[in-house]
Amino acid sequence: MTTTKLGARKWAVLLLIGLFGQFAWTIENMYFNVFLYNTISTDPGYIAAMVGWSAAAATLTTLLMGALSDRLGKRKAFICAGYLLWGLSTAAFGFITKENAARLFPHANAAAAAATLVVVMDCVMTFFGSTANDAAFNAYVTDITDETNRGRAESVLAILPLISMLVIFGLFDGLTQQGKWKEFFGIFGVAVSAVGLIAVFLVKDEAVKVESGGVRNLVYGLSPRIVRENPALYLSFAAFCLFSVAVQVFFPFLIIYMQNYLGIQDYAIVLGVVLILASAVSVISGRFIDRFGKLRFVFPAAGVMLAGLVGMYFVRSAPGVMVAGTVMMSGYMMMTAALGANIRDCTPPDRVGHFQGIRMIFAVLLPMVIGPAIGAAVIRGSDSTYIELGQVKTVPTPGIFLAAAAVLLLCFVPVVLLMKREKRE
View 1 (tube, rainbow, N blue to C red):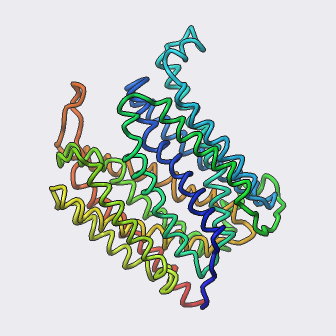
View 2: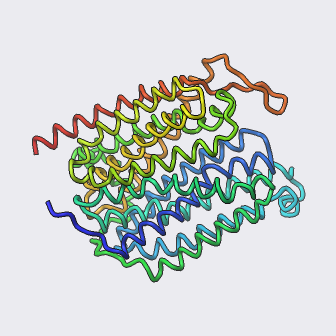
View 3: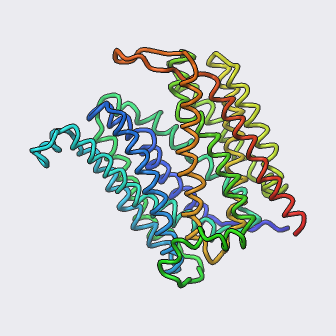
């Protein structure tokens, strides 16, 4: 099979738009909680509300806007306008303070009003981000790739979240430590909006078959008939869902575990080494995914991740975490690339935008609900605690990695079924 080359322009689109989208998602996933806790309210209820509503907003938005982009046969307009507004809404967080909330709502509790504004603005920001990135950009990636190059493209896209974390942790985290939230949000807000303007000249729409159907497109992928007609796609979704649940069992607690159970205070250095090495492995693996097949590659990738998870259960030092963590994250990124590429191969070409919303249900909504709940149950079952701000809190224990490994094993069920279908066909 001859590999199709993407070309310099398309690679530039993947790298530039993909990376700056990950900058915005990293801030949303890792810093909005800190901003809310440090500057407005320590009530965990607001953080829980923000995470839940944001996940719901992302899923519903991708369903709606993905279907609309299919209906119009356009991706570029959604990407450009979405990134522009995504950046502006990110920058707006710097202006949310208890003082400003008190001016806007003089008769309300200032902290409660400001916290509510953060939750609402997070949903607004998520709407623009999911429109631009989850719906339009992800559909665009499927449009411009094919079965011969998707593994390579996915392996590169898989490292962008880690690169964004390295850049933000290494170069800009100091602003948050100094309380310069307006500057922090402003820098990345302007950068994301600027990429939206650059995309006007860089992105070219591919030929997309225009679909009719109106509102019924929103529930198209949830119909039992469509599930029966696309068994390979939904088995791929199931595999990615189980894999993502396994990741969410430990990932939300990883830094807390390193700080409070292992006593590693320089966790940024440890994570930096892990992310750099694992990213290199992911890029190298891309050509092998396309050469040997996505589904076949899942087995060794899962084996690597399982070995890393077991290693993380046993290691207790920073060097040990670097080794086990590199193995774990290498497997994680290889599985992300292989399963993600297989989903793109199985997606009906005339419904690419719509199925981004269905993908969000399996890749984001369900894992973010189920995974942390499993991790929290494992943590609550331990007797390890620490004191923070005068309160006794439970410490994440190594058991979260074994629980993640157990969930990851379930991923083999849909993968084996997929391989059997592939052999029959």
